[in-house]
Amino acid sequence: MKLLKYISIILLFLTGCNAAHKNSLKEENNLDDSVLIEGAPNYFVALQNKFDSIEEFFPHQHFKKYDCSLLERYVNLDGYGLTAIDSLNCHKVFGSYQNEFGGFNQGYWFSFERQIHDFYPITVLQYIGIAERPLVMVLFDKHGDIVNSFPVADFYGESGGCLSSEFLNDSTLLQNYEWHEISYDAETNKDTIEIEYKTQHLTILSSGEIEIKEIKNRKK
Image (tube, rainbow, N blue to C red):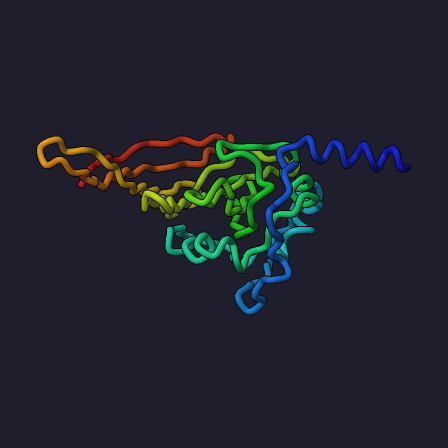
């Protein structure tokens, strides 16, 4: 039994959930600021086994819009008011899955979302550094496996950029990117700052794949 226990621990630390979180905020959560999940769907058994252990950690549910004002309080206060993703739940829910931002071991549980096609989404404030804290939607299938993940909001602290998203229908998001580009003006010998914008439609297909169509791109 002891040998099995040691093997399990070693396997846990070889996954995308291996790094220890720098702090745990569960004890510091403001209970008045939390909304317990109510009326959760009747999930398939495999999915329910995963979600049973984490439903209580989500302070939000069923968003139609995600923007930087939603994230600002959590980013500036280093996740205060959210529950950190501990190693055991990280391994149980995400396994070795990683996306473009890495693993979920330094993130925070954020929201439970409505079913999209045959997928069951949650959002996670994924930690990758002081300058960027993406809010990522993760799609699970009925077997509890992750089929895809993508950012729905992002807050670029140093450059002042922002990604916001809003559902146009049950499976398509209107996404607006805004960021600052710094360039040098040789005539004035000064740095100039341009604000760039990009608007796109992000559609979640029934296969779980993501289709992105750029609508416009402009500078100010």
